[in-house]
Image (cartoon, rainbow, N blue to C red; front, side):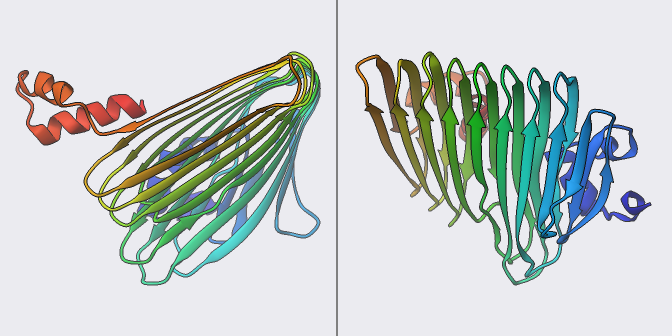
Length: 310
């Protein structure tokens, strides 16, 4: 069995971005390892098939499917491997499912390893989807780069929640998300990012609220340390009677930098859109309060950061 041949680093990454035990069970999953699909399992209601071009998978969830989860992690442990993978999700009407994706790169060599995942979601009428994506890097001198692109179409009454996390070890990341929300649909996006050293991370969200009574919420929380740089761009367009809120909160430390570029466009009078942004250092009184409880300054900083990104 392929799973039993994974090494310690590969299993450790798999546990962090998904759950290694899943791949010994009967659920729906697809594991990609070093550029190849190595394990796949379907259920009666979730069918995963290779794309015709061989560059990814298609996931079909039957209408009315409730309470099921599909895991589609990617593990790269080969230094110098660069790949672009296309995954398409077709979520049937009235579903309520969870998709757990993400990529872990262990690069023990000197060459750059890169994964670019291009995901498209078609969320059917009155369907609900929770999408969880985690990116983690470990290893030596070789760079670890991840470039996720996600496109979303939410049909009438549909709901999609996206939770994206990038906490450690990713040297370069560029995330792009584009969504169209139709009548009565809802999109909720929450991202959490931490960068350090010379790392860079950029995210761009573009949301079109096309249907009446559609709504969206985009929340970004990030911590930039060392000399790292982050860029947050949001563009929410209200094209009908709708509501939306975007929030960007960032903590900047050492010699790092964070830029936020918000844009909201009310293209009809009935669109109600709000944006908030806050970028700054850790408040001194927060550090003092924790240090009076016996923590060192470094321990106090870590406690504040962990709470901020929780």
